[in-house]
Length: 315
Image (cartoon, rainbow, N blue to C red; front, side, top):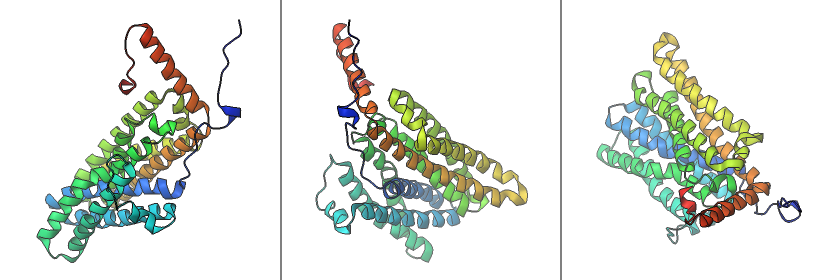
């Protein structure tokens, strides 16, 4: 009997086209959007709990990150008009359209919150803007995960359930890191707790994503992506631990908090760049497109033979 052929692709070429996005621009866009959105949430918490220095620092860093994220997106698109064209029509089914409108709503609120915090004027307006930025911040921090998962890229689409949670944890790590760098020790208690939650969430989401991806998960473990993601976990866990320990270090508390914050920021950036690199690697290797499709067909066939219905959404 002739053994079953192991088909990979047409003449060994990739089945799908790898993303044409610039890693620096789009992975940077992912990171900066997360820092901005989660930063506004922590800024609101600091604002309404009497932590003015931390609140102001996070408001300023959030609007700065939002501005840089838009600049990175426009640089990748090539012309500013391509970004403004996306604001002409709102398409609920398009993650890019929804994201552009989210930035259009979030940006002015974050900018007004930062301006009133720095100037010390129009406090009620500033409080309302702070709340508005905080309400839209979580979506700004995570919609890029939906944008990536909505593609045919195996390492992204296969982890469509876990990717938003991973990006949320990564964004929280970045925002708490910024708070530790810029805020006084006495005001950073909530940020330190957020860093611990971010570390736990990052580990849980990345582990669940790799489990769901099956053979495609090797793109998350090997090569440049694997190196970046391992560095991300080490930096985020180490940064969270150092942040918790910082208040007990006496005169070294302030430097330790800064180092912890920088580690969290770097770890968050490594997560975004690592996930991006994994996606590119999975698109370039035809095995990661063909093998999962074959496995799904086999599961569907087995379900039909057993008299049941195969539901891919339950995977």
